[in-house]
Length: 99
Image 1 (spheres, helix red, strand yellow):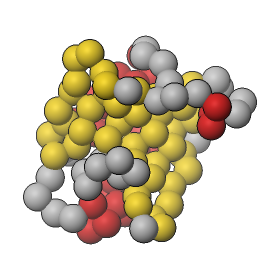
Image 2 (spheres, rainbow, N blue to C red):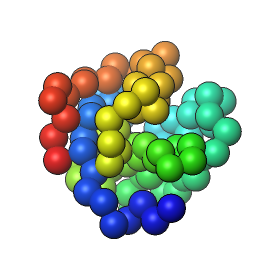
Image 3 (cartoon, one colour):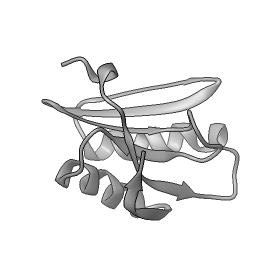
Image 4 (cartoon, rainbow, N blue to C red):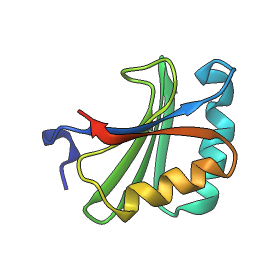
């Protein structure tokens, strides 16, 4: 599936005192321990993609200096990622999500 043709909603933002690039590796390790299909990179910004069939959740810093949880659709796939992050981080959930 081409994920680039749909707009994403921001479901939450991860709160931490460090710079995002300082926690990138530990956040990737946490997400990889919970999900099987994960892509990630650190190239100016930090990004982590969790892929599951037609569902994709992104955790990235493309529009913020902190990691944001984004997806094109709401659903349990987003909640599972937020729950995984909450095992280690404070996650501010936006209700409703912002585009």
